[in-house]
Length: 480
Image (cartoon, rainbow, N blue to C red; front, side):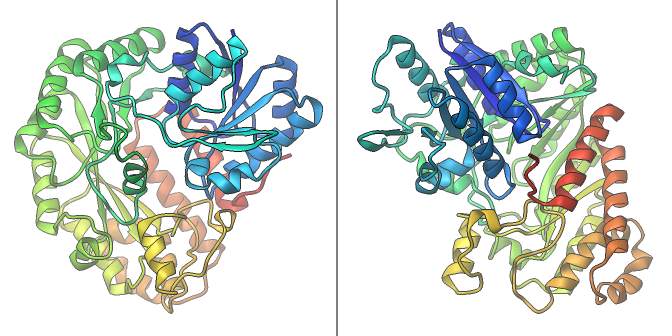
């Protein structure tokens, strides 16, 4: 048996971590979580637990990798025998840079269930683990750079996510809505999304877009319902409606056996009147879909999001017809976007009678197709991952003449959407320098949207707000 500690600083239940833990436990290994914002406290707790392996799931451009690296360094100073394994988006995108750090022993690129299990099994048997697909392994001989391994094509072979891992901290005790995930992968190749990059990484490694069978998913939800008594579920799949027949079967089973409200994400071209009726009958109360920009030329061209304004109108109409609220995701600050374009986004939301608006500032995060395009055109200088903004709610790294007006408009997005008569005043205000007052307008607007849209327990909302505020004001500061 191998003792594995998962370590993270964000108060959130990661599905990757829960899936890895479940797979390892099923094989007889011991897993535990250290959830701590302080580097020193996290390292101290890990050392007290005396694991064989510490696993970090790290994001890029959030300060998450840098924080995890500091914890790994602190662990290694006291006990060099603990194996440190870094997985997640950062080592997947930046393997060489990650392995260049002395405190990193192993990285995993792509999905981790199969390689993590094989790693722990070989460690338990005292065997060499340098040849495991998807892992890069550091040794006295150098770095073994193994190719990405096969995907888990049949998701039903995986055990249910190990939510008990987070109950050490009472994580699910005050959650009115509990997250679930019904599948992996997305059909589309939007230039501002990482999906295409990950699909290319796994090319030839099995089916990329996969769903748990409706029966498997329902059994998982029944277990969650029995253990934690949630009042609703939030499906965090990137695209819930990827398969219409799956939606139909799932909706019938969900209505019969789960009988709780839920929310999920769709695209305007994968939802129709029939699907909306099924989802509404099953209990869907709000469904989110991406608008991104109200300017169709930008959406179809620059963003490569193949959804028209007419499709967005039709989808919103179908959802509303069946009593489902519409939450849209919107972005300002696109390359080449004008202030008029940004106001078009607000106006489109008003036209389709959006119920709730989610609004961010475009961030050219590393390796995105759109970021690569900007760098190739010289519009964005080469920037290290750690230089990017940690939050999508503040400034922009783009160097274009109107960018301060666009980022200012982001702060007033909700107000203009809700009160269209404010548009002339806001057009004047956004020309002023960014300031504390604009930030407060955004914070209050976003808080109101969250309170009215998300069916979350007040304590859960407060925890989310506290974490987001720390990032908003402190960006990527690493707490020691």
